[in-house]
Image: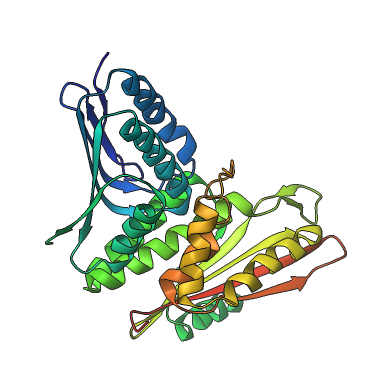
Length: 126
Length: 182
């Protein structure tokens, strides 16, 4: 199974998923008009990973902006991670937010309230 | 020619930073967002304000992109056109949008806006999570999260109006205020 890698663009984040180490990174902006199209390959790749997951899976989310069209897709990604967590791989989601960005912190807390996976809120200095 | 000056003056009075009328495409939104980002950097806006305005602007513009109804114009050609303006007065940003809407779609939209406007901060947070997690994925995007998000981030009531054009269509306008006071 190949690693998953997408370069970022002005409206979409960069995504790297290293299947050897079980580290998934989502970084940048996620404001595409059509988020379903953008996130579907990642959801599919998590599906494949779930059958051969590592003992631990680390997810680093560091978004500068994301739109509401992305928010449901991100929830879908987290739901996949929740089922991987239940399946025996210890998943941790590190949700990064910039020091003064209360909206981003709150968004992370919203997901934390819905998803049954350990979340860490990580403050980033600008 | 006088008309051009009148439009200019009106915009000047309202401190309009940027305005657009026409078809709203994905590429246009990319450019507009880039321009606004540069403008806010030039104005040395504080990061917190910059982020809030940018976020709310994305939602407002993508709302137009996804939801404006196609209506026939005077020459019976399909028209998918909208207007938006972004103004700034001291620490207050205002985003105006206007687009045609079929009259049959007004009740649903008005109901959603009134519901969002009736909720306080905590209720909005709760409602956002409820809609986020309702399992409904709209093909158009956020599945009803846009207005809730705008209300949450601005902490203001959403001002709107429907101006009836004829028995089939109306013109829908939104007036969104963004400050860091809230």
